Length: 452
Image (tube, rainbow, N blue to C red; front, side, top):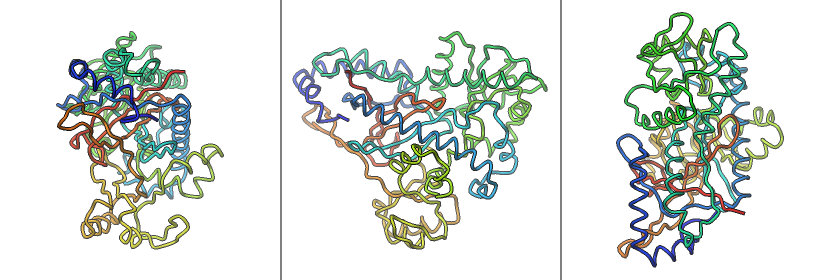
């Protein structure tokens, strides 16, 4: 992996041609604005300096991400088959009933994004998102803009570098799941080519992405619409939204919102239960969205059920994680009462809600005052939290090409998309704070693969 100050050609050229740098930066910012590379009302900012992976590095990351998803597939089935573990998922009975429904295709987790740190050759996954896993249309539009504005300058040393396009894999996965669903569901007359509905509540901050994916579907000759549960009607044979019949739902509605708002999802749930509609991102994918998934990857009963290669990848790449509860736990060979141990060694741990988004509720022990940490941990014991060993953040200096601020130290976060069980590309981001958040100055980071 090369980035920041390691990119000597990149630094040398732009430092010697500041007018070119400023022009390229303006052009790239314009691309992001025109392409609606946004979160909510904000057009996202970006780094000009890329992160470059060697081809073997990319292959190793892709392989590891696919194995983590293979573990998520097995974990989902393990939880479904072992009712004694259901206590770890605080859902109403009605949502559990929907989670148990067979989605009609073989994948439990067709759509996912890992979050990771890459420190030299050491890859560590810190979370798995199986519920929405947003950002791919922004990543694609950004990389396309970067390829047109920055990469053509041969002096920057980026010749032969390539990027992954993620959204085509999203669409391929939607269609593959639908074909399998249709083949397994001859009771309903479903067309060979579905009308796709991208489902979430109105007004969500990721609406820009839904529109982009719908446009990408239409560019491939597919009918696609952004739809909301309050527009749904089920007549016993088919599901419609505002009068448009939908055969395939791409669920972007968060599982937690589904569980909390089931009274507003009667039509969608009834159609799904009747197999009148294929839902990709079925409710059962919410199982692996819980951060408790990483805790169970350390459960000897579950770990030993994994294939040898997957088990080896998990041991190499998943940090020590436990459900936060009053129990004894092993920490690298030391057995202790978990809660007192976490209180006494806060600098070694991160406290996380089992279900959250955008970093909400996460606390780093080393940057939290002792009294505040103690209160948070003790309060979390009675709630739905995990405790994870702190993984050192990866940092690099990124040039700003100004006298006032020549370099800025940034934290680097990688996201690995896996759709249909196959690695599909990266979401690269930097942040001024260890906790990644758009309000902490998050920027998109170009993630490129070096040529031969």
